[in-house]
Length: 142
Image (tube, rainbow, N blue to C red; front, side):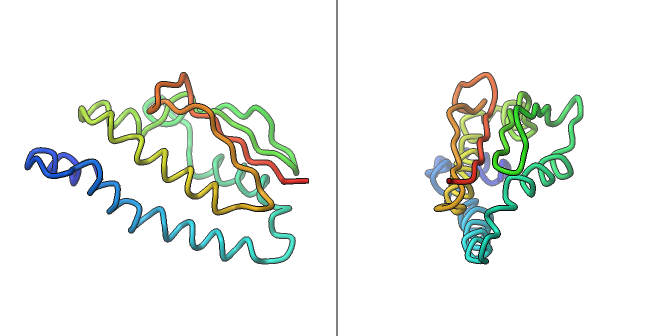
């Protein structure tokens, strides 16, 4: 995505919008569609906080050059964690396209919204939007 964005940017084409559209069509919208389908399974939402905790711990491995994740709370009703260092943000900065990282963050927002109505997803901060960390909050709606 970064290479596509940089290429379009060099050609002075609406690079941020066009690359965002490509990312959404190929990655974000299919993921959200899948999540909406899964969320139709009766009572599956009761497993979501623990599933998210497991996914984050196994898929987003911490490393000095990659992710630094701090779990605030993880139980059967809530999964709350902060990403203090993000590999996507680091690479966007490294390749001098920090403005592009918000596209990745927007994908999280779309995916989180796909978990409604039984799961509440909230986010107040992201590194790409000027926050000190990216906060993720997934809670079962009572």
